[in-house]
Structure formats: C-alpha cells, structure tokens
Length: 137
Image (cartoon, rainbow, N blue to C red; front, side, top):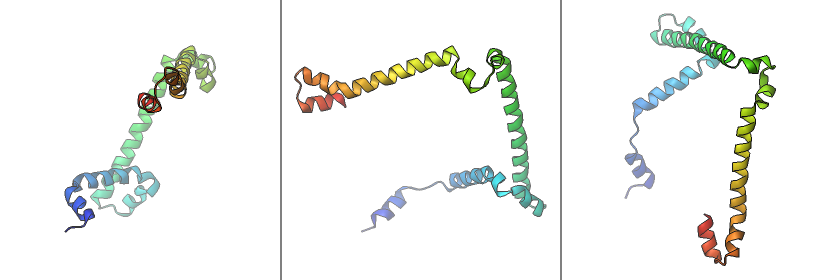
C-alpha cells in the first residue's frame, strides 16, 4: 500500500513550464533589489543578462511615462480639487466622498444590527433555539 503523500503527489502533476515562468517573473520583479544591472555589466556576452537588463530599463521608462501621463490626466480632469488646495483633506471634503461614506456606514451598521439582533427578534416570535440558529446562518 502506498503512502498517502505519495498518492497525492502522483495525482497532482505540476506543469513545470508554468513554474519556471513564474520563477522568471519573480526574478524580474526582484531585479532592482538584486542589482541585475551590475550582473549584466559583468557578463557582457550573456544573452540572458542582456535581456534582463533591457527589460528592466524599458519597463522602468514605460512605467515612469505612464505614471506621469496619468498624473497629468488626473490634474486636467479634477481642476477644482487642485484649486481648493488638493491633497487628502480636499478629497475627504468632496461631497461625493462624504455621500459614499454615509452609504457605506449605513450599510455596515444595518448589517451589524441584523447580525447581532436578529436572534433576539426571532426569539420574540417563539422559534426554538435550533430554528433560530439555522435561520441566522
């Protein structure tokens, strides 16, 4: 008879290519911390390090350009927030944020009231403890 761990291992066949791809993506994400640019400079003939360095520099430039474009777009759309001082305080004073906060708070409070008090309300109607438990789940 086989060990249960071995049986599970046989049933779960992993796709090694997907694992290798995930590992490579994680490696690229850690490129800045691990200073891959120095490794690319140390191994100028390695296609791997050239590719990693190229991806790192291209993605950094793309990300910086995208973030700057989004900031400029945000500034052009929300001129009134910037004119009132901008920042967190202006966002918190925005009537839309205040209205949505009231909706969220009311919904949360209502759900907590139902969750906490519904067993007592059902008990007033004469239900048994088992029935109350099943109805409140």
